[in-house]
Image (cartoon, rainbow, N blue to C red):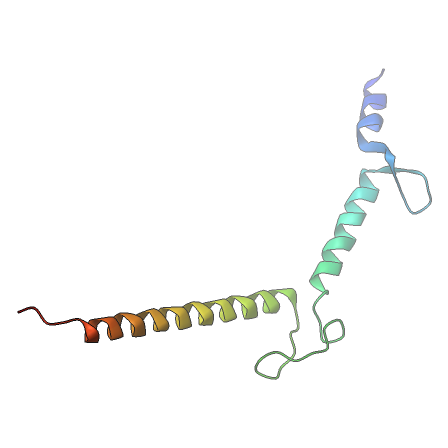
Length: 99
């Protein structure tokens, strides 16, 4: 096997076909990755997700969606912390003073 044969063998896959039904090569794989990344980047848009967020706006990107989820989780954590503070305060109020 020559070096050229080894490179061709390495950069092609008989298990994957390109859009023409031929053996896929590294260019096909990179093109598929680029298309996939583009699809992800445009997956959450007003057209794809036409609903409104909690403030009545539209989510324009995946990044914005993740930031909204992070904000919501932070609000939940803050609420849990406030409940814990209220419970501790109530427990402190009901404790009997030492004699």
